Length: 101
Image 1 (tube, rainbow, N blue to C red):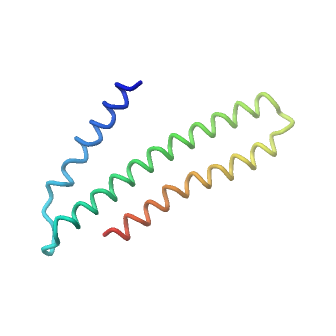
Image 2: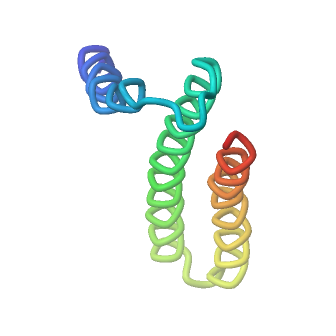
């Protein structure tokens, strides 16, 4: 598991390296480019983890509904609330990337 995590982080850094190679427009400093690159990397990580979280939540809710059909309504409400909260993380990160521009 540790090797997969190290490989994933290395791959993400290699794929994100072209961001640092771009020239800044309008004579902006290097700190502006680094801030923008960090915001974009954060958006990618947040979106990926939100997708994983939503998949796990949906799978767990489907399993819970299959095990206890009498509690479908309560499980559905909890699932929708959970999915909304998970999705809000990606939306907040998107807002931050626009602010970082």
